[in-house]
Length: 485
Image (cartoon, rainbow, N blue to C red; front, side, top):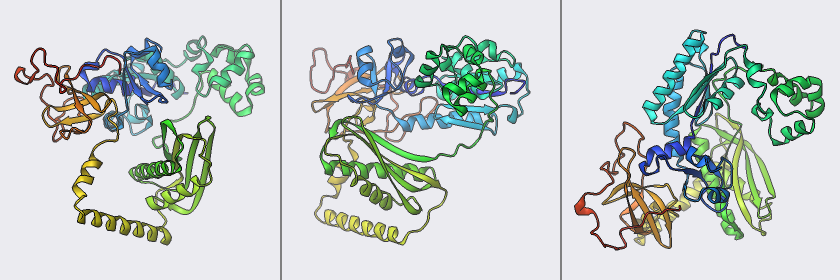
């Protein structure tokens, strides 16, 4: 335990939802829920306005809609979130060489390693300046906790939410933690909490009073001993700059159970390609391919195959995933599929058979493309590929006439778009046919201080009078604002 609160924990406030509010002026101050928007979706992040209604992370979206029907329900835009995260992480690395990211919006920082004096006033000043810098660079807010240990710094940042800073002075840990619920301690989930509750243990103070022997009896040696140390407010874990990933995976939950075997196989191959993209983006390769299948009855199966060496070859990983799928019965219906790669390495082991398979696939693809071009269908195919399969709520779009906007809703062959940018006033809503050639997917715009991407207008989304509809105009080009998304 450190004698000064030189470990900083940053947690961005309602990160995904706050980023969406910053990007969409019409949603500022209103409830926003980001996550799966389908009937089987799960809430990833809810804005503080939505949390008032009881909406929480990991809640089924269907339940969230019942609690807060008038919220904006948006699909995640990870490209935007990663861009903002990169800016925040740069600010943290400017404070210290020891930064331990936990996720896109959360990290520990060892201020002592960055040369900050081990004094409460000095670390508090650094924390306050960090909050100001984050607001200036991203337009978003973050909460900061400062303490002499990682566990305490995280508890402090949670207490600081939203948009605050809390310092836990060394020596005050047990007094602070005592009345808190045992669920406050890391590693105490619902099952552990229930075991402790049956033993009459509800708070951190009661956990410490129970003693190490009793906790070991209730929870086992490793968990019980570790929990006792944490209940005393002790945590000597260092801030680790590099957290090596053990695996890389992707998965999708489907709104309707998949029963067509061909469709299931095509989805597995698509997920394998996405997994390879993440693998290569991380500069890694993997030796073990894993598939995950969740059936209609929520039973979940995993199958794995270990290759002769680490690879990032898409053909090899696709073939392995397809082989694994053949060992799983999917006739009852599949609600979720996933593909992952573990046994990660920083190199690839050349495989003659994989090379031959890749070359064969490339030759077949080239031959098919040549035949299609000869038939005059290339341009049409490219146009079809550019259009999304679905206009998901929150998706960035660009219209040839109206510029940049985002999808507010879609259905029955129509898509409703609100045209606004992060730096404009709340924008006008218009509706188009889903196949309108003037409408196409766009890229996220910078939240603050940036120029719009090529081809995306930065003009205010409120249209000039000569472009606005005349009173009484009910033409199909003008859409009604959706009150329930």
